[in-house]
Image (cartoon, rainbow, N blue to C red):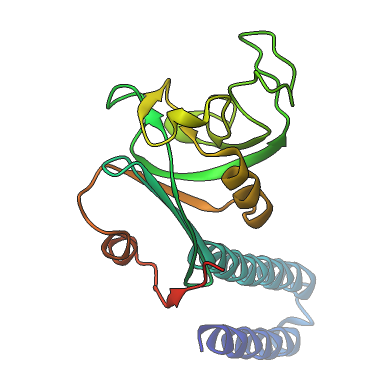
Length: 219
């Protein structure tokens, strides 16, 4: 409806300005003022057209961002040390995770997946990607937590499966290697990630975050 109204306004404006140009031509053709007036009105039309295009671009971008936000959602609840992944309103995965060894290690907030990396090296320990000793496992989903760019916090694999479910990390969210590889193949860059510490259920949290829960698809 808004797009239609803007379109009608734009057409009406062009017709109105065209009539003004014609009238000014008739009234001022003997005074040599037509050219300057025409230039002014043409410039006005140009400005309005640019604003029109910008508005439509903004509307399109907003719609696209909303679609991405409402399509997929990951919630990580440190209270239970579990992760849930929703796709198109349906639960696709519920998995145990490991989080920070102290409460502040794994930040709480609203983030996004900003990169996806296979076999990321563990630079601190000089361990190559894909090595069984690599504590990052074979998949890395980088998060923009605490103003970072996906190179500090992430959802990733592990080199110690027994650590999953515990509070042991330096801030990242660890998953079982089979689980992170499955999640990695499902999600896209831009997927929203909510990290919280709450006794509420995942369905209650999804409602709080404005996500419409439709059911389960965990096959």
